[in-house]
Image (cartoon, rainbow, N blue to C red; front, top):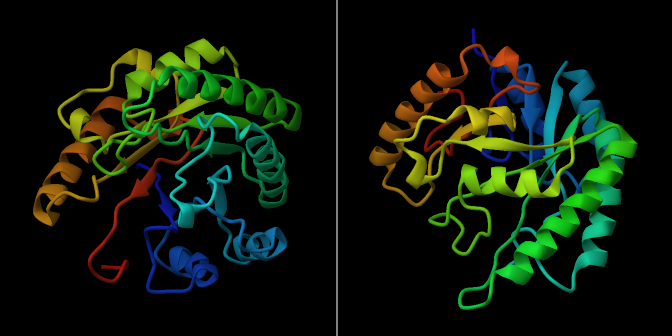
Length: 250
């Protein structure tokens, strides 16, 4: 029986964030993930996890200032000090919440710019984070995000993530197997990608028509079950990144 983690950024959004933990447990989930815990004291989130017998399997590193257009800063030259501070904060929250791994959102390379300095900055920052995480007993993952949802995202597909993981060369760096890139809809994840996968995820490209997204989500769910079999072989529960247009319990 597949085990799935509820992403509290997408599910149970009819509730305030701190009330989503109880809602997830009532719906039968045993694990959760969420991108940005940093607006709340770690002790408060830890109590919600404990009270609801939930495991937190993944959080993101700080992603910069969303109000100013940031969507990850790991690839941004000149912001290395901010990234290092985010690594320290991520470790603090991971230890408080019992989270085994953190996701690094790589960031956006502005259109028209030479991408190589952005890629080089990403590699250097991932190496730094992997070293700090290894000392802290944590894993690091990098997530490909399709450029339909996030134009200019520097790691758009799973093969690109694998190439970066190999170049970084850290044994505690893995990837998220993202089945929501529109370019990957028809692809079966090959063994090379699966070898680097720490956390499989399903989802729908958010800008697609709802009916198309629903159909393709069913295809990706079938791909996930066919390709990875029993998710217990992974270190993590598979995550769900669907945005529902109704009450989450439906």
